[in-house]
Length: 238
Image 1 (cartoon, helix red, strand yellow):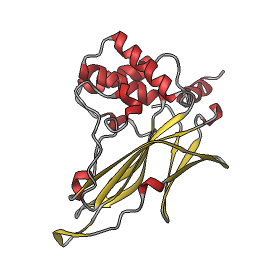
Image 2 (cartoon, rainbow, N blue to C red):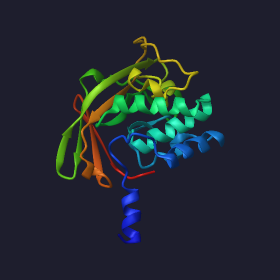
Image 3 (tube, one colour):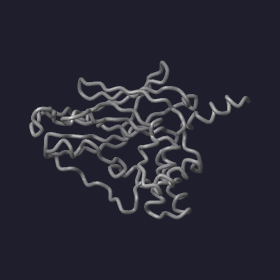
Image 4 (cartoon, one colour):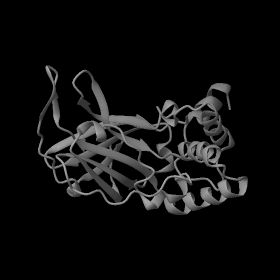
């Protein structure tokens, strides 16, 4: 195998969960936590923006799809091991719990939101937007010419009277499916009271990807009501 082929093979991220986390990705997570940097700074190959919201001065990404790749999950475990002081044995145990929860599927966190529109000339003036029925969302994926159906495993709806409160929120505290990823000091969110015209929905979506998907572009389709959101990411390492 040539050097170029070796590099190309390494860049192709594994689709299924290995029996143990990749040390390089784990150590990167530890290093980011030590430097007090966000994991979002290295999720560019796992993340694609699906929608933006105008906050009165700029367009803010508020809707996205995040591929929970084995590399990304290893970084998460490494990051929170530093934050919460997990031992090596606890990290191994949490990885096995993750592997059992994920299985041979690929999981995505998909966040959609309907936020009131802000008038750039009147900073305290908002135009109400009727939220769709997020419970009826349908997700699918396109790999080359093949359409793959997504399965919703979990959905968390949150509401607010203020759009800024939902512009950016965490996801790992909204699903018991990924409990082993939550830091010790972060509790699972209680169901949100449906008050307010601003709504955000966080989904955990599973899809069966073939091993041959590594290194190839994958398009995410999120349909709620008559609105379709799409975004494409490439299944690469890092």
